[in-house]
Image (cartoon, rainbow, N blue to C red):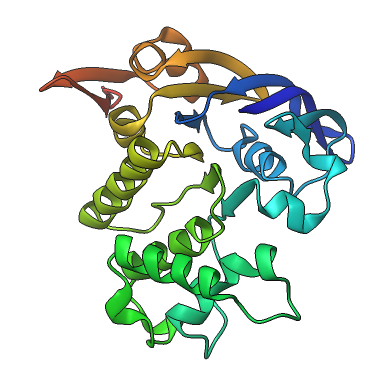
Amino acid sequence: MVSLSHVELRAGSTTLVHDVSLEVARGTWCTIIGPNGAGKTSLVSALAGLRALDGGHVSIDGQRLDHLKERARARLVAYVPQHPQIPTGMSVLEYVALGRIAFHGVMRPPSSGDRAVVDGVLERLALAGFREREGTSLSGGERQRMVLARALAQSTRVLVLDEPISGLDVRHQMDLLELLKKEVAECELTVIATLHDLTLASLFTDRMVLLDHGRVVLDGAAHDVIQSEEMQRSYGVALRIVNIDGADVVVPVRKVYP
């Protein structure tokens, strides 16, 4: 479904991502983890076709993203940034409806089909009651659901998210991740995300990719990556992995000072 082939990303003389090749199957949740500066945000922005590559290519369903125009690309992959910009004065309905522009264009009004898709997404994400509210007036959790709703309104098979639960409390983190898991299970959505919370990543993820200094260190089932020595070396901190009711809980171990 999603294929990265020998992807290279640079900023001046600094290599951010080096020779990364991955394939992610349809209906899979793949989480990219790694320490700060590992290249995670650069990689997912390239995955969404929003950053020019310095080498290699990204394909979805066999179509290279760098060969597609913006509207065609937006029908294949949706992107949720870490810090989305919410325009002042725009209602929740108007913001979510932006996800349909790839289908009806900027100069044409949305069709009845477009409106039906938006209404359906608002219902699924429990946002129907907020449709006329200004987006900037929502709470953090509600706003994150709105941003996710806009991405889902694009009706793509691939959703790329950069730290989607950043700044949310535990309840809203769980609510958002449960929503995503439901979309993966019921709609065969392919989710590729970055997450800092290793416990939550292991709880929801099918597959985990450990990135460090722009290189893939480990790629496999979430449980195997979480339990690995490579993960502890990459983060540079001692970690205890505790199994609670079948879930891997990652606990950092404090240093003992004399």
